[in-house]
Image (cartoon, rainbow, N blue to C red; front, side, top):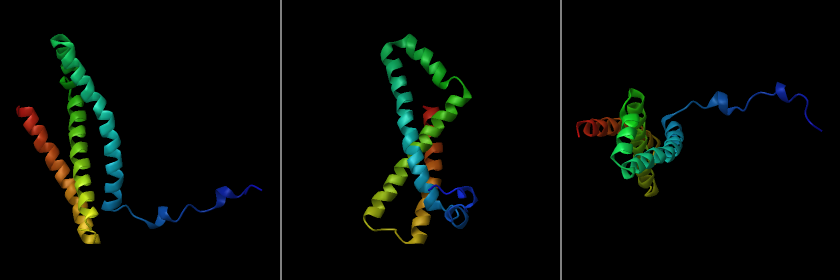
Length: 131
């Protein structure tokens, strides 16, 4: 028989006990960036199709893709996601060799991914804007 007092039960204890830490957040962000990069593939394909369609189509799409500030923000997000996902993959390759599995080292690697992805995204964006 169904429990009629289901709403009076406490929530799962993990909601009160666990605080987010860098390894948890990093794992979640790697999944989010992977999904975001899947969506970003369609923007890149759109850009390539516009280039293949001819100069007029390319010019029109380039105006849309780079003509307003939000587009630059989206492209920066894609570049950051690419860096973050790549550095997370490198961290997992390191872990596959059973290196850096100690908690302090793993947390340092997590913060390195955050800092490295921001630095890589800024540097890549600057290079792309100059060229």
